[in-house]
Length: 515
Image (cartoon, rainbow, N blue to C red; front, side, top):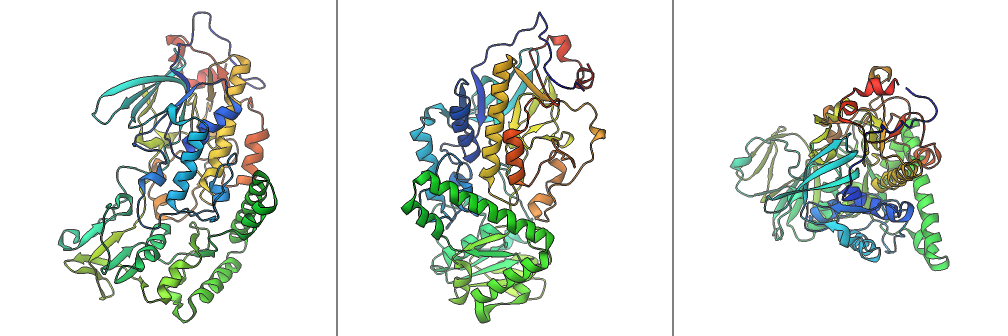
């Protein structure tokens, strides 16, 4: 592989084809909106557009409509680096987050650049033209195409079309209603009903206290206990600082504080898991009093081997103490006409069963991506700088942190891609490719070393991660921010070039890398 500069000379007969926009952003959720603003701030000379498959912006925050939908991270880190979070509550509900995103889009005149109800059904890169051709499908099924120099996927990490199906036996026998949170019915009537929520993650723990006030009783049925972190919904320091300091400065201080605390807790959990487990258990006992049950609240894994489940203002435990909610730890034998038969022999009567059993992960929004006609199998490619992929040109995607807020990664990825685009402008190049001539030279590492079911079920489709940078999807935001912000763009791995003739475009990347 070339050392020093990684810019190839333009073949005399090759010319980049014109494009409809320099950057096409797929998805108008947190990742896509963030990239649009970063382009405005850092690469204002680049044209861009967004395509969104839904009728509204917001992504996850527009799709999920279940009661109590809220952030599972504080909004001073789930919020963008460029836009202060102004609400009193740091743990915010879905409508407040949508308000935040809509305000950004309108104030910065981004809405006019979004094409709604456009689903990306394919993306094809041409090395001869140095551009992506993206095929879109509208609500009627009619297709159209658009072209871009760079493709940026802010399409999330899970399957929007179908959730994970746990395939419970006897579903067809149940005479009540079965609901999955990903597709919550608009007018679900749970008043006075016996409700069983299957699952113990963030979704279940949000739904239970939100519906407990109206339901006759809500039972959370879990196979395995979860580690919970209790914290106030309001950040007292943030609200105090906003009163005495300029808004942006107050936000920066609070954001810095929360990032550091997240990092300290995660590192402590990895280094001294028993200490963190003791601390979390102590807080649980304080919150539950005589309702504390070690069987229900002692996970068989260490804290942060799965994401900590946030409980704002201990609302979940307050519902338990009010006898409006309870937790059952057991395995499901089958559904029957009146509820759920458990393997212990116990039966849970139910009018409504909510299957909060998790998400089904998807890579690249399930979009078929081809490079010069060859379909990309993402499981055969390595991450580069946590956002690009080995031997895939002019392409980036966001996969947020497992141990911190999603937006932290989205922000630094957007900033980094802008740095790459600016370098391409300055060097008058049109193509940037992370070249990996010999994948076997890298030592693979399972950076997804979380025991969460949704992660483990998807390992076979995920891109690879190596032990060493830049081919590693790190889970260390503090270090990543330094590397992505100040590390060299032209690092000898990311190769910058131009459109190639058809013959050159067909040449293996390994041969080109060895030039």
